[in-house]
Image (cartoon, rainbow, N blue to C red; front, side, top):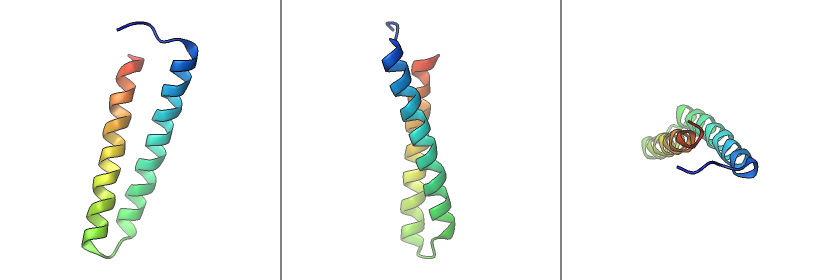
Length: 61
């Protein structure tokens, strides 16, 4: 993999932070949901945000 420049590195870090924030919010929404379908939707979205964050982190290693 080629080297990332400073701007790309900064963008990736920003995206990682955004996905972590989304994960935490969606997880909270899931815990507060009463409807099982809504709860599942939030859980799935939270997991997708966490998976994307983990994929983005591979660019930093």
